Amino acid sequence: QVMVVESGGGLVQPGGSLRLSCSASGFTVSRYAMAWYRQAPGKERELVAAISSSGSTNYGGSVKGRFTISRDNAKNVVFLQLSSLKPEDTAVYYCHAQSPPYLGAKGYWGQGTQVTVSS
Image (cartoon, rainbow, N blue to C red; front, side, top):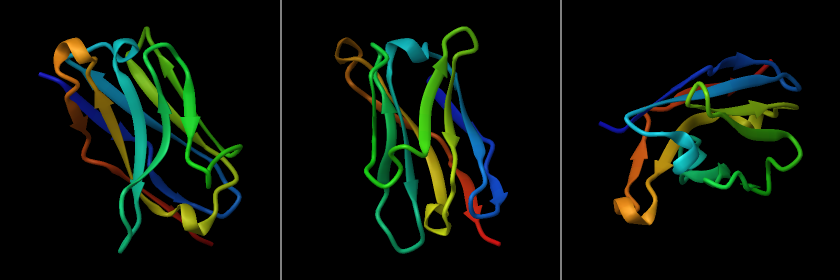
C-alpha cells in the first residue's frame, strides 16, 4: 500500500527555517516523481517543489532560492528545507507521489503538515 506521511511543520518566526519530511512506504521514492504542494486558506493548492526520479528539481516562482527539495534514498524520505520564511508561506504543506507510467501514473497525497510563519 502506497503511503506518504508528512512531518516537521510548526510555528516559526519570519526569516526562520524549517525542514519538512515526507516518509514513504509501499514504494521507493527514487522511482517516483515526488513533490511538495501547499494550500493557504482561501487559496488553491500550488506546487512548491518537485524532484523527478532522475533527480532533477523544479520550484514554484515564489520559493526559488529559499526552499530546497531533496531525498534520502536510503531512508526513503523526501525533504523540503524552508529558509527565509515569510508570513505568506503560511499554509498546509502536502507531499505528493506519482507512480511511473508503467504503474499507471497514479498520484498519492499525504495528510499535510501545517506551517505557520508569524511573529
